[in-house]
Image (tube, rainbow, N blue to C red; front, top):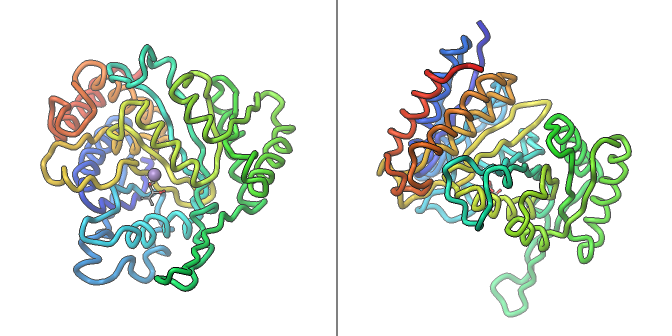
Length: 357
Ligand code: IPM
Ligand code: MN
């Protein structure tokens, strides 16, 4: 029997609640399709930091490298200054595990209230390939004369030919494999960021020569936020840098119905990848059994797809669509008409009962 070792980091806030439902679903689908998932839990997050003063223990990154994948809940604690845990855990893992792609599907599921008038599931189904190790997130820059009227703060965007090219290549390959519209859009800002996005644009069109079957398109980041709202059906696969990817995928999450269903994968195609709901730790809903676990469940599905368990990933998606289409009143915490655990149980029921073809 095939088996996979998965590191689980439930993390902060509602992370543990949604991960618990995700694990329930993963257990059900692996049982049904005959493979095993061995989960090993790590308590990294705000509570551990407040208790011990340690963000990530020595050797943690090396240990995580041994797993087939990492399943993460959420990082961010109301009693810890913003940035400490995000940088010390989430970003550090993305960087040190060289998860250079952040893959974020934007898909409107049946039954979900879309805030865009007259847009249907067939209109909203695209995926953003966000660069995940460079750009403004690299931490380059510094501060001078801090706290004085002459303070200077510089935050630089790092774009390497190697980093840009591997991201763009991944996007072309992904687009070809997806085989939907066979259209790849580069999202940038070539009219102002004339150093960084010149590199992106040149690399994009150079790599494009190897993919004559893919239609290439370009959109400025400000314009793309407009098109997401007006014409989301134009998009198939979008590739962009770290910062723009961060921003446009929150907008993407809203047009697919909200953070309750938005999942993402931090991918190292040659190493260990990490899958997470992208909504954060939602402290005000913590422990109330009201948060929507579907994003974590969908992240679990992405993890199985990444591990090559395609059938399982499809069943999870089908089950989620049954639940959104026939049960949930809303995707928002407290308004679903069901509790967190009940939504998990519903998905498990469909994962167990749905026909396999
Ligand atoms: C995300 C988050 C993170 C990011 C934060 C928590 C550091 O917003 O995954 O999009 O900016 O990448
Ligand atoms: Mn974000």
